[in-house]
Image (tube, rainbow, N blue to C red; front, top):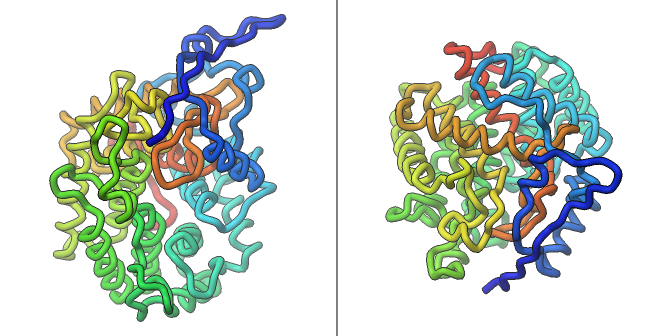
Length: 411
C-alpha cells in the first residue's frame, strides 16, 4: 500500500503576481515517495521531461480556448508542439517515450498543415537509418516504426530503404511464440504494448499489402486480451501481476495511462485494418466497451486520475491518460462508431480540463512519470509521451471541427 503524504503547495509571488489560474490550481496533493522520485530523476536524466518547482514553471496559459473550432484547436496544438519541439529535438531517441511524441508530431503536421514537425521526424528517421532499437525488438522497440512507416506512406511508397530494415526486424519475431527465446512471457504481456506494437504491424500491412502482418497482430492482441482484459470492469490490468492487487480503497488497480494506451492502440490499429475484415468487429466491440466504462469514470473537472477506481487517493488529474481517452473517443465519434450525442460532451469537458494544464510557455503539465502503476507527481510534471498523447487528441479534435476527414499524408 502506498503512503498518503499530502502537503499544501504555496506560490511565492515575489515581485510579480502569477496567473490566478496557477494559484487556483494549487491544492493539497501527495508528494512522490523516494522510489517515485528516483523514477522522476531518471526520466529527467534521460531528457524525457522535467518537473520543476511551480514558481519556476511560471503561470498557466490564458490565451487558449477549449472551443472545438479549427482556429482554437490549431492554437492549442501549436502552442504545445512548438515548445516541445524546441525543448526535445536535441535529445531525440528511439525509445518508446520518444516514439509516442513522434506519433503526435506526425498528427500535428497533418492537423495544422505545418511541415516542420514532420520534417523533424524525417531528420530523426534518417539519423537512425530507419532501424529499430534491437534486432529482436519487443513492442516498445517496434513503436518508432509507426513513424517510419507513416513517412514511407506519405512519400508514396517510393523508397523501400525506409522500411526494409524494419521488415527484417519484424521477421525475427513473427515466428516466435514468446517474447524472445528463453523468455516464457507472451510477446505483448503488458497492456502498454498494445499502443506500441499493433499499430506498427498494421502500418506495415498498409505499406506492403502482406496480410501476415495483420494475422500476427490479431493473434497476439487476442492473447493479451485473454490475459489482461477484465470482462466485468471492461478495463485492462497493466500486466498479470496486477490482477490480484488492490488500491487503498480495496478496488482493483486500473491505471489511467494504461487504459489510454489500450484505447489509443485500438484506434491506431483500426485506422489501417481493412473495414471489411471480419476481425475488425472484435476491436470495435472492445473500444465501445472501454469507452462506456471510461466515460462513466470522468471527473467533475473533465479529467481522469492515475488510479481509475481510486481518484481520491490520487487527487491530481493525469493528463497523458486523459489525452489518450480524448484521442480515442474523438476518433470513434469521427469515424461514426461511437455515438456523438453521448461522447462529444465527454470529449469537450475533457479537452477543457486538459487545457487548464498548459503553461504560458507551452509546457503541458500534470503528466505522471514513466512507470507501471498509478503514482504521485507534481502539477508541473511534463514528459514527451504525454505531449504526444495531447497532440494526437488535438489532431482528432481538428478533424472533428472540420466535419470532414483530414488530408492525412500517410494514408
